[in-house]
Image (tube, rainbow, N blue to C red; front, side, top):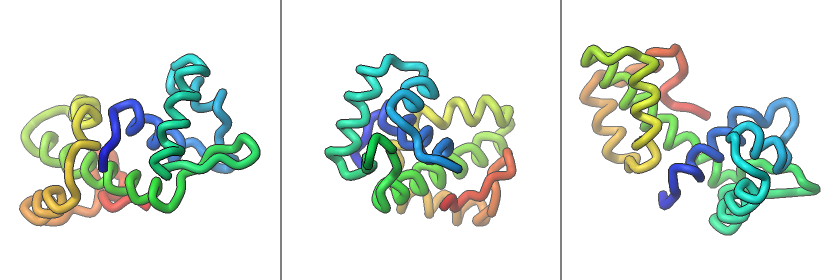
Length: 131
């Protein structure tokens, strides 16, 4: 996956905040604490990568976008487990892992998961395999 940190954050914001209704550009800007023109540019980049779709002003993840979200969350939660098992506070681990989770490849994360015993949940109780 070839995305930036801002794109990663936007994918997570869209996924985690689009229920019960999809988000609009102004929602994304507000949730990410960025200006609407910056959000517009970010949305256009994600549209060009087929990660999101925009219909009548409503922004949702594509199937591909949902796959990317799941891969990011699996990496995030796996790395978070490893850090907390090493003695790092779970909230600090979460913050640290956000800096690199989108850079990890799935096969490496799956090997790490096997190494730590295939846990089902992260330290915050969320499923390692997000949907």
